[in-house]
Length: 364
Image (cartoon, rainbow, N blue to C red; front, side):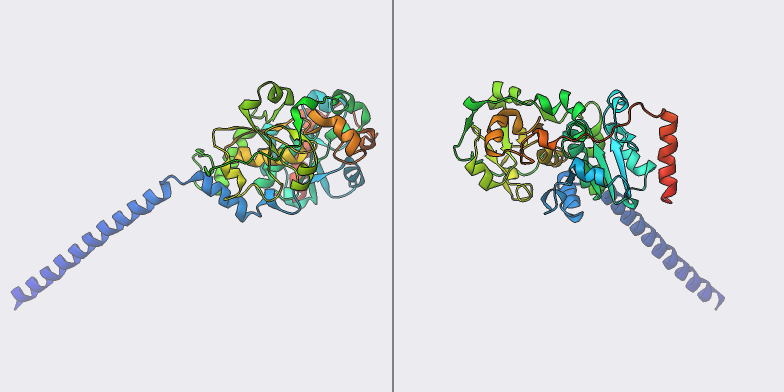
């Protein structure tokens, strides 16, 4: 009787051990599969595009681009806003908006993450010299999800007329022989988006890594002078990022493609007809809206540039006749004489101010 009981207990123990072994082995295999799935590379281009769509599809929103005039900014100085001056320290010291903090583009992501509680402000306004750099950086920050970020149209050149002497006031070029009223060039084929490889594990990580790379000093150059396109027209796919009706009734460089804003930069749209290897030059009226489009294109992996000064760089004379005193044409009507503060706070003082801003908002 004892032997039978011992054998029964022995069999039960054997079965328990086998079940434990099988369970452990299966668990290990499941953990291996989970680990492999977690570390498996993702389609970064698709993940990034999905991230943009899930966060409001900024580039195609009705309210895009997030740009304000110098007059609007001046009228909000006593409101709950935070101004960031992206120019270099020398330009900043020569004259800046009082209260503006000087932050280089390479440091802007960390500044938003660690120095301020951006959502606390009604607006975080980025300024630069001509308005195109701030539009480009604003475009990137909007794509990262900072939807209260704005740029100042025409930059400090519009804020104070003296600062325009070395910037927008020099725009007088005209290239009549390069301009035509021919229909827009039609691109053929569907190539999909360029492949991106950052090592990011999800859409946000890919977006952040792309932003960091594009704002790095080695990659920050995002515009091209029209003279370069004029000299080598076959090197670029030129995109007029303007409404279709304006494009049809106006002149434009020969061989230009028309991408109407807010509908063209999306999956299945005309952007997928651009070969991923193409060099792209984008223009709008003054380079501000096209800087936002260029930010999206470069984030998505395209080799894109915004044409410096926009269409004003090659048809300013046309604007003087057909768009007189509109925001599309750079003119004296856009210049102001709002006050500027010269000199700059010490690095220590600026850091103290940044920390104070963060603490005041209760940010962590």
